Length: 390
Image 1 (cartoon, rainbow, N blue to C red):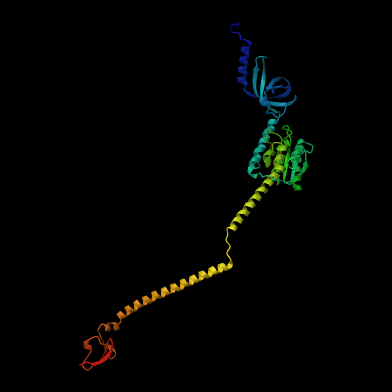
Image 2 (spheres, rainbow, N blue to C red):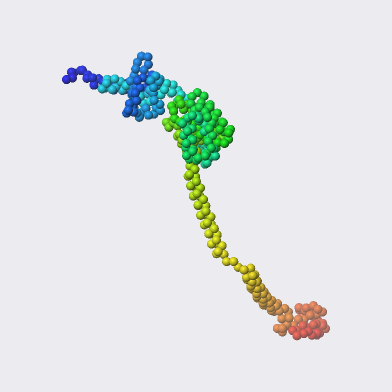
């Protein structure tokens, strides 16, 4: 029986839980990992400590899947999350949502700043990426000679295109100075001149293992390469700067080998298919031309000459007939013009009973121009007479 004014343990715990959650909200805490346990459920249970205190922590499976590495006791970390009180045990825990190694935040900020810088310079532009050759005669690989990445690439190339030439430029792919070695390996492959495409990368690893592929000098070496480069840094969670600068990104070294080389068997099948299609097209073309040729009727040259002569005779007849018709039309027109001219001639007037009188070769137009004793010539239709005026 609860006494008035007295809290139960549950009520107090719930009140504290609500107050703590509201008071602290989202926070960040740094410390050293201790007593780490990965439960079979996938959740992580551990503590972080410093010189004066220990804080119990829980990181659920959905959150720790994004970490990419497993904590070990003694690792200095920064946790992001919120405080929660677990009533059955009466203790408080930090529910961690994110985990980063100490100093990783500064490294990530520097990495993001470098990405922004290279992006502003256009090194990430899709337009500058070059297509890979359809069938390279040689593939260059810049990676560790003892790593699994090289073995995976060799196996895939051997399976897809046996006998394809692989040129290895060995280099370290992690640790201090590895970025310089990778860039030097790329340069050796470029100077060699045989590789038509280059794979650079390694298998998966922790962010520290992959740090070389976020190096600015290596990024610029990849961007400046005259040979297309495939970046094969086997890490699905984060995209490295090498991935962004390269002409193509592959999820793993095996995937890179699949991208740069087609299957020989598939190519052979394609060649066979294209050969059959070409032969069929040629046969169809020959059949069509044969049909058109058979449809053409060839005429003997002598027959063509005879036909030309007939056409010539026909043209000559038409020319003569046309000339005759034209001549008759012109003769008829000329007769008409002669009749009209005769009707208008003085001789025509004489035929109608008139006479023309002239004196000394000059026409007499008026009576007053004549006098007694003048000799005149009188022209009639059938001749002329001489007369004297009285």
